[in-house]
Length: 192
Image 1 (tube, rainbow, N blue to C red):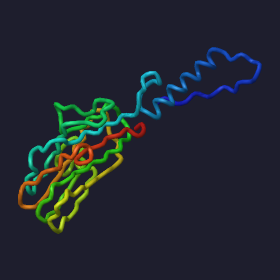
Image 2: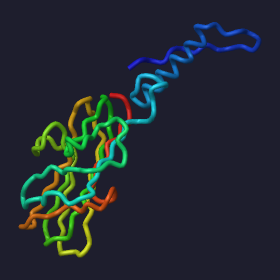
Image 3: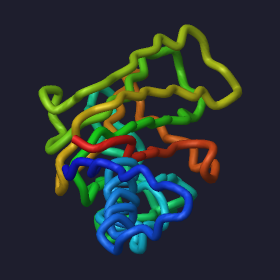
Image 4: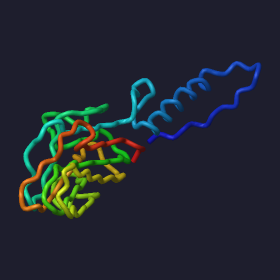
């Protein structure tokens, strides 16, 4: 990551040199790279942010099986980190600190334990970097929402998955309630 150059103190009545003015432009580009992860101010539209979500019911989550969530729409995809052709993974295109938040909206089922986890570069327990577990004690006529979040060093090309698990004894669905139901949000926060 580049460093900011020393600034020149300007004085009234003196004409600044070209190098002093160019130094200001270099610092603007450097500041832009530090705060957004993009190389130059001219190429910046915003921070990297992706929020895929479910709008349709997909495969039911089998009981006692770690399942990778698939998405079919997005509320934001600034850096094209999520692709419909690879609907279960988000792949950031730059190194840095990333804030990852996920929500599973479970359809009502029998009492059971429900889990949601964020995994990187694989879909086994050993790949999970954040998780949440909730015991649902009684059937509820309403969907139950469960969230998990973390901030993590993520390298360019790393694949982020959301995994869910339940043990109700029968298959369970995730609610496809637009972007307020089942989703994942991946936001670039700072350089590595």
